[in-house]
Amino acid sequence: MRGSSHLAIGLITGVAVAGLVPGVPFSVAGIALAGFSSLAPDLDHPGSRLSKRLGFAQNYVRWAFVAAALLLAAYTHFQLPIGPDRRMGFTAALAFGLIGAAMQGDSTRKLALMFTGLCTVVAGLYTGFLWLSMLGCFVAVAPFTAHRSWTHTIWAAGLWTYIGHLANQTLGWHGVALFAGGGYVSHLLADTLTKAGVKWFMPLLDYAFKIPLIRTGSASGNMLEVAICVGYGLLVLGLVIGKIGF
Image 1 (cartoon, one colour):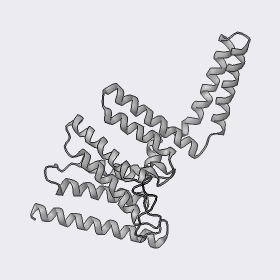
Image 2 (spheres, rainbow, N blue to C red; image 1 turned 135 degrees about the horizontal axis):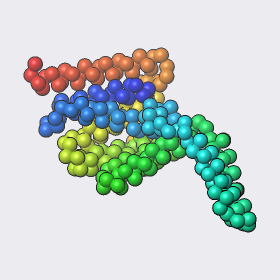
Image 3 (cartoon, rainbow, N blue to C red; image 1 turned 180 degrees about the vertical axis):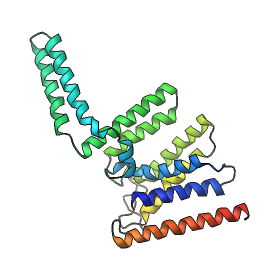
Image 4 (spheres, rainbow, N blue to C red; image 1 turned 60 degrees about the vertical axis):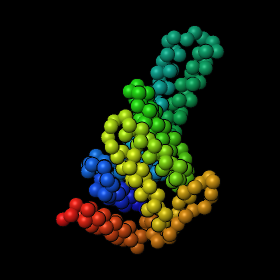
């Protein structure tokens, strides 16, 4: 399913959580969190919306390697005496330069996301927020997994929900786990409607559960995605209005 459809379904799920779950206040931030969470499983895909947004530094990763090579070469030239250490320094500088020059496409994206995730881990350690460090670990590791593998499992959904639970305890923002978990699970449910399906219980069960209604990327599939989003939105809107009592 397309990223725009996942985002729409995630936001609608956020509205459902905010408007239907007792004790959860209606929150625009919570709805936005559900939308963000609905894109998280596709961090394993190079073309996903969230990969592109969180990998904001990917255009600079190559040049970071080249800059590191130049700095290492300068340090080696001016600081190290002639001998094995000097040769090793120039060899390492050359390796960094070649890696930076050759790096492009998906490899750059993965390194950029890993850098983004590790910075988030450090921020979590500095502030003492375990949930922030766990979120950073997720962002750093997910790009290195195969598409629709472990990020598309019930275990990953549980981990994401637990991260929301920890954030809930730390921030005192009631409903974080529900918004986060609801958005994440909405992605898996939506992908279950595609022909590829989802291996919910991998690796315990290597079976893709699917109701093959949607062929992603096809004209008919795109129209069906829009219809599902509209139908789901109308259903949630009707339930919320009914609860309010209009």
